[in-house]
Image 1 (cartoon, helix red, strand yellow):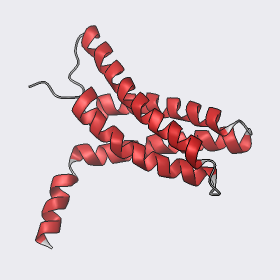
Image 2: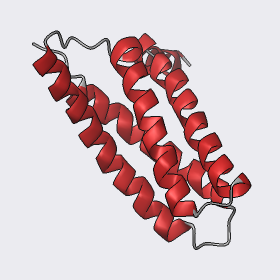
Image 3: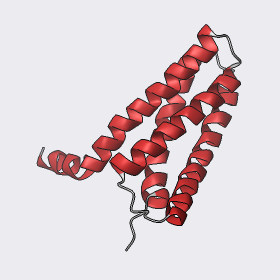
Length: 139
């Protein structure tokens, strides 16, 4: 039991907890906007998925840079590079999510369930990309 508590203490840092909170917020924006566009407005699922991902990435950047990883970028150049590293990381996971959608939307499960599964995978990947690439601390 002590080992589990020790592991939880190592894993559930303030950074991870904040990432989870804002990750859930970003995921809700992604899912709700997808649902509105695809189900209510009857837009194509891939168009809806793309727009939902873009909205989620913008919210994620703002919350991650200021509230989760506490960006150290000071100059305009540093901020520009950091933003594009973040966008590049998200582009990679967007391709994974979008490609997964092309495959999984063909399965006989509700589109929103497919979208949720893809989001869980993307959230995990995005944490590591943000921490180790986009918002990497200076030594």
